[in-house]
Image (cartoon, rainbow, N blue to C red):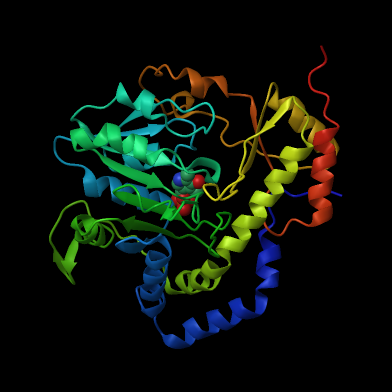
Length: 365
Ligand SMILES: *Cc1c(COP(=O)(O)O)cnc(C)c1O
């Protein structure tokens, strides 16, 4: 038996009939972008999150880029982000013509450390991105405390964390703006690309809405520069409307899988916990002395793994300036591994991953 890292065909097969009916309905409607499905999805997601407004975009990276453009000013041209989060914020900031400053992470949560942030902020900073990495909510309140006195926006990157909540506060409703991706492997996945931006106060609504569509304030009136064309299409919006009500159950199942892994892993493997609703269980990440050894052991037992993410931003070939000193980020290089984790994993597949974990003996001493 080979256990796949992910298998998107399983959910698609389960939902085959409804997805086909939805596609037929959209085709018959004659609306293909910014029609009734898109409008309804924006409202349904805003209600789910308890935010002021949601605006659809073509991808999560577009959502980040547009959010950065919305808060940048002629004097605030810097974005601060963590270096271990796949480089999406960095990519989007550079695409918007902004500068990136990298912040270290908290060793327990692997999300941006407000303590490290304190030494990095000044009035050239437009925004700080808190990436809710692996699905775990980062410390948005801590980042806000550092940012608010300087007028710096806090943006939550919720690409991996849609559905996470801290009591009655949903992830994505705490910062100034939040961004989402509906890339097929995300917890709320489309059958193609998609993204969204949530605003928590009305002041940014019109700016974000204009920036995602040519800088228009009204049709054909380009009121601001820096506009883009980034739209979530009707088909994807309709599929996402079907899947949004299933999200919480899927996240629950993901957390249960991660708890099983945590209960089976020997002491030499630390499974990052996903035990409460502040975590969506997007990725089952473990920390161990040697990730390559563990990956090889799991491969022998038919278990597929990946690494999220293998190369910090400052070590990427495109990074031009001297790498900053980020000791905590650096300390996890080569020590993290992601295990299969998606709601449609079968009980016997989860059992097989658990016994493969349990039989790992670590590095020969
Ligand atoms: C997937 C992802 C993105 C990018 O989303 P796309 O829709 O692929 O552009 C951004 N940030 C994080 C943390 C992600 O996981």
